[in-house]
Length: 266
Image 1 (cartoon, rainbow, N blue to C red):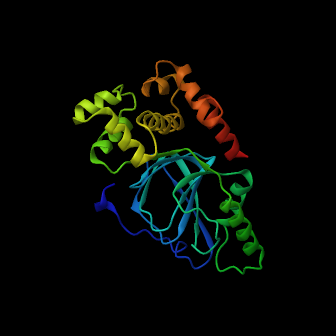
Image 2: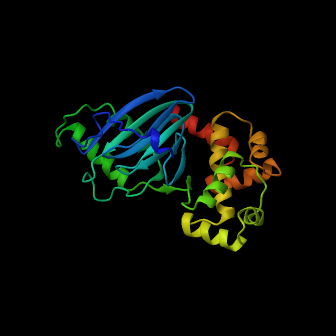
Image 3: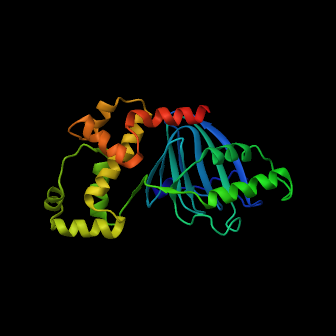
């Protein structure tokens, strides 16, 4: 990420004056929030639209059925895919002992979604034994038990590997094999494989599949047809792409955002 563009972005509610506080914002398609951080942890959720969130450690795609947990002090930037209705909560570090410690995509249950919507309307100060205080305590319990989901694209630190990752992110249909990249970098293929596993926790093949999955969500959110998405990602057929997608999400790509839209409307 470009360190030149980093700046302090504070909304007042992220200063930790209360254990939990929230805010809402609506963004137009393609809007970018520059690189910034908050003194509190943050749960980023869009009730409509898809966000792509980038940090030095990786990239995450966040559809309406998901949220992104962001630890305090972590630099990040956001790009909106389609119109986005953002609802975000800020958490003081001592608000709950079991709050997540790492940046991760999390599942948003129907109950948690309603709690988020209610919480962003609460204006501090609020008493702990009041209706608003009890709402926040229930919300904290729900957040502390959030399931982590595989929508992260981790970035390696090695410059050579980052070059590979940048190419595969920008051109997900690039058919270059591990040996192709090894010849270009002047190293052995096993060396690249070991570095990928050490720095990302994934093999080269797993990382490329995850990169394609991340781009697939962007393309689908932008309204592209499944057959076009499959070809743009380098799959030999729509069925091969659909099989991979179903293995990851338990549903075909044609149903993913249809279900997300139904959930947001309900």
